[in-house]
Length: 277
Image (cartoon, rainbow, N blue to C red):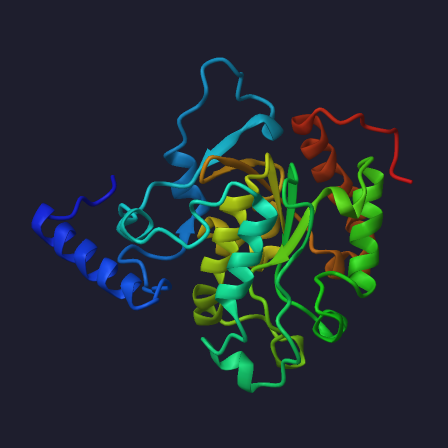
């Protein structure tokens, strides 16, 4: 159950947040008081099945991440883009707010530029990866290297174009040597991704790889368990599949990734070909 704050404390916090807003400060970072990673078994135990849909087929299950503490910051700290109805303009505001970001150590560790995100501001489908690589850091756009070419082929196999979807990463700066992002780096950068998601309002999110899935869902489980399920992410359905970079290293898993994409296509009402082109 979400923890409810004392009304007086909530009022005091709201006043303090408004005070910082008046100073032009909108970003706040804090660690949750609940464990950041929830075992998959615990999440499964708290699932409430939808009565109108049978839960027998594995791909029909919708797994809801248990509720965490009431997000006072989202209520008392409205973002600059909250009153903007044009999603393209709202995304520009978020990018301006991000600025030449120095909020974590990565700005001192060789990143060339911030990789914000690219695609249709009104996309029904959003892909979220881990972090920019060398090619992305050079060009300032996510998924433009070899993994990006494979992602383009995956999108094409779904009957879509890259321009139809929106593509972003958990963090927006390249970690040195393409290492896995640290937890504090994800916590510092992901609030901007959450704002992008809130603006785009996709019908479906596809988390590419374990880092993206575990960060978004706060579930610590192997990919074999994360895949094949629907998750409820802030009112949006989320599916998990392999990162294209992993598929380049292990092409045998491409058939499994195609199964994940077919699950997404069925949810979105897209026609499924016999095999990806």
